[in-house]
Amino acid sequence: MVARGRPCPSTSETIDVLYPTYEARRALSAPLYNLAAVQAMTLRSLPPQVQRTRWGRALRAMSETTDALRLTHVRPEFKIETVEIAGEQVPVREEVVTSTPFGTLLRFQKKADLDQPRVLLVPGLAGHFATVRDTVKTFLPDHDVYVADWHNARDIPARDGRFGLDEYVGHLIDFLGAIGPGGHLVAVCQPCPTALAAASIMAEDEHAAQPRSLVLMAGPVDARINPGPVNRFAARTPVDLLERAVITKVPWPYAGAGRRVYPGFLQATGFMALAPRRHLSAFFGLMCDLAGGNDDDASKTRDFYEEYFAVLDVSAEFYLETARTIFQDHDLPSGRMRWRQRQVNPAAIKSALFTIEGANDTICPPGQTQAAQDLCTGIPESRKRHLLQPGVGHYGIFSGTRFEREAYPEIRTFIGEAEAAAANR
Image 1: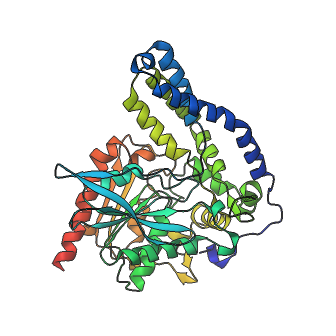
Image 2: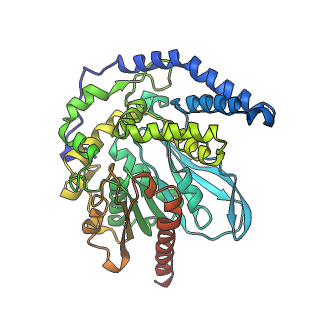
Image 3: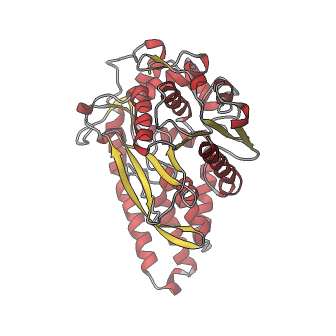
């Protein structure tokens, strides 16, 4: 899905020193992080009366805060073993439905005879692993939950070929096909435009598994609207300059050696730079919570950064094509987006549509996701809904207490209405 049929630029000026420099810095800092992890584990094993001393709490706070700063390159476990349904704890296990070198369709199988709406959650492929753990937990009591679990490009051999926007949309279509007819598609952030593209193609093809409803949460459907810092940076930076600046090759000894990627450690650094004070405040708060024995709040902060700092490399094709198609040429709202040489036509979609935005979102500001409402002219207004959450930033749109209390109940009702409408047809 390259804008206007143009191929991504190719250059011999790839910054091959970028990844080796990062690996060298990582190797040098590893002893510090390892020492902090061992020290924290040792302190946690001491008798409670020692742990509760002033010095015991202070040492543990410093050790665990230092350990939490480490970037990792492995997807954190979802750690969802049970879910409460009607007052009972129901066992949950992860099941691989289908898999390719680039992504796995996971199902959170509940060991119970439940007939619940099937939901495919699609997280972004933007330098982080599937950061939807809280979202999955929230959806699970009421839905049969599937997740598109994208793989780290540095672990994918170059012989497995390219992975760009065409391949991404193809995966969404295939994943919905594997789930079967009557599923619901929930896109979180970056994949909102590609979710619309997949639904458009499936609608035109009268695909049996086209989604019954679409829920788009904080995604750049039309990045021209109310542009934020991310939009402005992408719009003013030529793609060939991006390629020279941030695309590198995976080094030996990783399985993907030689594959061109946008490294996840750059994405993490970039997002930290967007709000440095907020992150410094979060880590200072983590240290204070640990030192003060406030383990519940400390655990929430630690869990967030465990996902935030679990980075993956993105294939160069996907990164550059996304930058050009979504953020520079705006091909979807302009009617120029193509998938495997086919026109993407959101007007063909008949699925119910729910768009959700946060009033304080600076990564995907209000209006960019709501733009889908105007593109999907084939959906009756009675089957469209929009929610603008006051006082909510980007991550609060799909995780956290306010998501659970405010947005999720409306999503649950919306999906339930789509199920009822299908049953009555």
